Amino acid sequence: MNTENLLWVDEKALKKEQINLVRAEKSLNNFVEAAGIVLGNLNNDQRELIRKERMEYIKAEIKKHFPFPNATEEFNYQSLGVNLNALNELLKNATPWKQYDFDLDENGSFSASEEQRAFQNYYRYADTDRKNAALSFAKKIEALVAEAQEKGFVDHGLLPDVSNAFRG
Image (cartoon, rainbow, N blue to C red; front, side, top):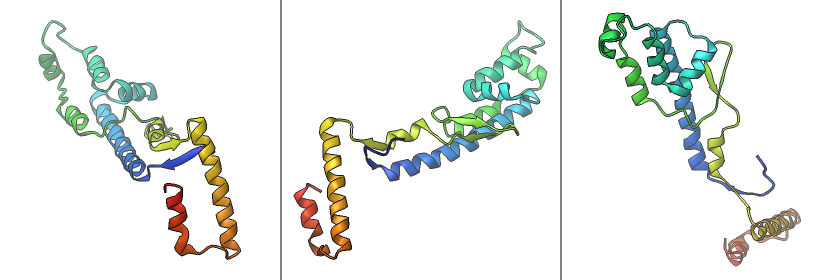
């Protein structure tokens, strides 16, 4: 993340997104764990496919074992003793995880990656020449005001007037 031309961060929205990420991580791991109960032991490739394809992958894997290929899916699930209601319920109530990036650890659990593309939505940057020039100017003023404060030249009661002169 380039902080050189960073204008501001929507901290409130970013915090909410970070909470959603924690919920999504928990939802994902709960779903994969429940899928493991239905499908049996999962390797990391299968876990990744479940993360990406969700129920489509699970149903495709179960379908490979259908004893009656010409019968309905429901009949085949019953004959295999498979009930997908719990998985469907978990998925229905899950915090969506597709917009986040996860790493798979050696224990087969997903953890949120350090860098999240979704977080970039809450950072605002100077993206034009005019904004960059204004930002550069503001940084110079900030440095001068800090120096003036150190030397005792600043009347803090008048700082709002300075701020108003620069439109906040």
